[in-house]
Structure formats: structure tokens, C-alpha cells
Length: 209
Image (cartoon, rainbow, N blue to C red; front, side, top):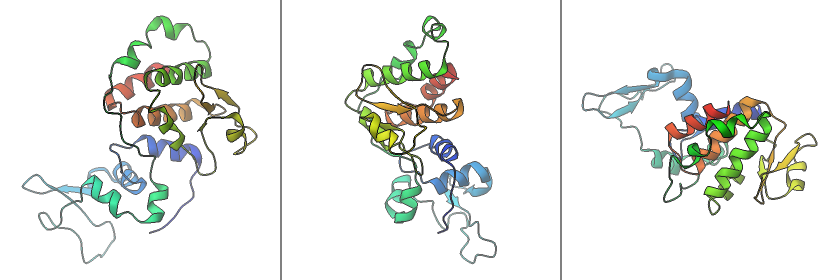
């Protein structure tokens, strides 16, 4: 297991590509960088991972070694890989997938001329819809920075230029001194933690960006 240092915005992007709870950063990068080369489907329809190490003597062959289920990978990951993995949390029991998108109609979007104000508005709507589960956003962190907290002081401790702002009508604060791409990644993570499906996440992000 090797370790590398990456910037906060790159980490947030990688985390935003998570397809299921418990998927490790290594699995995400393998999927993004290697695509179909990292996976081979056997004749009976079951996936087996190919060895990515040249000359490896234990390369998987179709039908010889099954890819572990997502939950198995999470359970068997080492402490170091667990630290690199994207934030994970149990999805709420019930999520009305269209609830947030209905609140982002054209009239609402046109009323926000500043991207940061729209960012805060969307977070406020998500908090209103998921007050009991919203605390999960505190898991979203960079290498040396916290992005959500219940106080301004907690965010300022991680950097003097974080420009924290309070999410309207909520006890939560969020870092706002980042570019649009980083805000998009943060929104994707929040939506995923709150249990929204890929289609809804994409719709919200597109209306923001």
C-alpha cells in the first residue's frame, strides 16, 4: 500500500465520483483511470478484477477469483486506506428524490446572481429537507481542512482564508473561499451522503453550475 499527497480540490473531486457506500479511493481511481482495463467480465456474468502489477503470478482469471462485494472491500481495507476513502454514511431511510429539484426552479435560480449565494441556498434547502441527517456533512473534509462545522471558529482553525458563512436557517457553517468546481464537488458529496440517486445529484449540480 503506497501513500500520496493530493490537493484538497482533487480529493473532493475523487470523493464525488463514489458510486457506492464504502468504495475506497483506490477503487475510484482504478475505475476512473483504467476503465474497462481494470475489470473483466467472465462468461457467467460475474466480475473478476485483473492484476495491475506486471508479471504478477496471481493474476485473476475468469471464474477463478471473484471481485469482493463493496461491503467486503470496506471491511477488509487497511487503516491507511480507510483514511484515504471518501466520506461514507448510511443513507436516510427515505428520500424524496425530486424534493430538492422542485425547489430549484427557473424563477428561484434567476433570483441568485452570485454563485456563493446559490450555493448557500441549496445547502439551506437540503438542511430543511434533512434536518436529522444533515450532520453527516461534517464528514466532508480535505487533507488539512474541515468544510462543514457547527461554528465559524471551527472552520477558521483550519485556515485563515476559509471565508466561512452560515447556511441560512441552520446551525451549520461552510467554507466558501473555493472555486465553482470545488463547490460542485462539495454539493455532490452532500447529496450522496443524504441518499440522493445519481440522476438527482446530476440535476442539482447542473442547475448550480
